[in-house]
Length: 207
Image (cartoon, rainbow, N blue to C red; front, side, top):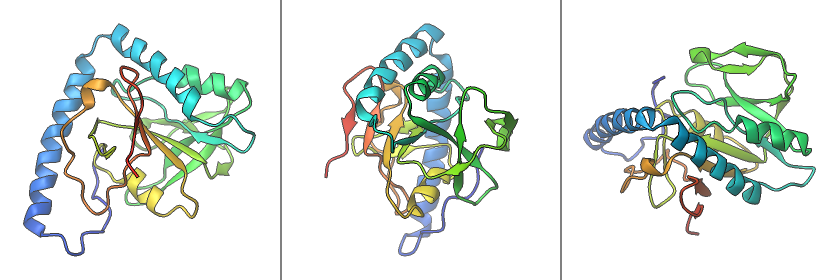
């Protein structure tokens, strides 16, 4: 699932950037392995607690469009919460990666949506309307105290968020064991507004 990160390296020392990329690759592999090793009951309990926290953070007004995600590689499974919010009237979307190096688009989802396989065989709505979310929930591999998110290395979310005209509320979700001291933020990294783990109170980014 790896591709080049966004081209925003002006003024960044190339050697330092390479060192950070190498470190992130190793840290990413370690964190994913640890997540895969988590017992299913722990993952399920934390995902249920995340859902409760998300209900408090995600506005319930008619204008809300929330982008969730289809879980892969033992990510928190928020599909029950996604359906619950849809049933309560919140518009729901899923992110769609059209091609490497391109921003995501968001297609509206419902329980009866026809699903297709996108990049890396991740399920996506086959023909949902393209929408602009007001809330983006981003799965994370790791996170730090500054609410910076370590993802899979493709730069999809950073690229997409940087190009959105109206900034959405951005919430990173992952298990508590994904906490690290720092992700060594680079110029293209966009911090989350909140980090939700289900094992501790939601962490808000400092102003």
